[in-house]
Amino acid sequence: MKIVIACTSAGAGHLKAAEAIFNYFRSQEPDQEPVLVDVLEESDFLFGSFYSRSYSFMVNHCQWLWNLIFQLTSRKNLQPALTKVRTLHNRLNTSNFRQYLTQTIPDVIISTHYLASNIACSLKKKGQITSKIVTVITDFGVHPFWVYDQTDWYAVASDASKNELIKLGISEDKIRVTGIPVDPKFSGGFNKIELRAKFGLDSWTFTVLVVTGSFGIGPIEAIVDLLHGRVQILAVCAKNEELFKRLKAKNYSGVKVFGFVDNIDELMAVADLIVTKPGGLSIAELLAMELVPVFISAIPGQEAKNIEILSGYGIGEKAQNAARVKEIVLDYLNSPQKLKTAKERIRKMRKPHAAEEIYRALR
Image (cartoon, rainbow, N blue to C red):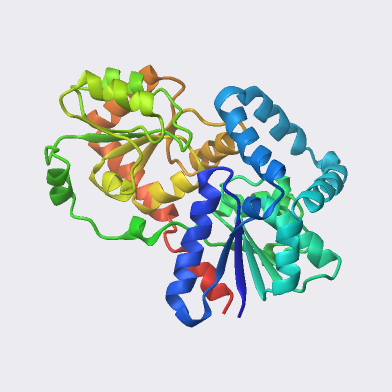
């Protein structure tokens, strides 16, 4: 069976979900290796560059514009016109990827970004491919851009996500609640005491993991300033080198500062609570780790919707600023039962084996 897993590198989550699927499929059938393709790398240079950089610019410097675009493109009455314009625009700028699909003729195309879904579905509509198309929605909310008639079925994060799709006109039998695919390391067993010793942490002190998004944004420094001395803190600055330098220079006791890390699973394992942006993949990972979240710096649109849906399950609290983060963290610190109850809710919702569920559904 020829399987193409298509994603984009506009935002880390879509790529990470695709990699999780790719790695699981490859582990199950080494002799029939799937192909992982970044659509933007197979697009016209200017289109690919603008696609990723414009998103990065808006979420970092112009969120009001991103919110306006998100809200306008969510309107039901605009979908027919938007779909035509989007499909034409994508067709003109992704000829390499379209040619790859028509020449490869995959049996299955698994998409973790709506750009890939749009291209694959437009080819299928014209009869240029006959592939089964599976769309993996990488947020808990569902924007109409994910929805195409030619999609065979959708993999979604939660029952609430399923209901969002049904409201958009998708029949229930085309939706599978698999969860969002994450790396299996997020469901591995960890020895919390040993890991805390590895990071130079006290074994029994309440520990908070504070994480920026992939773009290195959020009031991380202010949160660390307010919480140090009350709890142990792991501060992950990602690609924000200036933030990393400032926090390191403060040399706070009980605060460990990291730049870009590849062992976020270990940092999650030693934490009692995480302060993070509410990206779809970040949420899927912390749920798999049974880690209680406090959400900060939500991107308007999809991340705000993620918070709304998680709130419906009684999971996570939203903090508008660092002072509110401090209040929430200290409330959990002083209320062990509240933390226990939050973890129990997470256990009921977590779906750490999404890639396996998708694999089995295709067999």
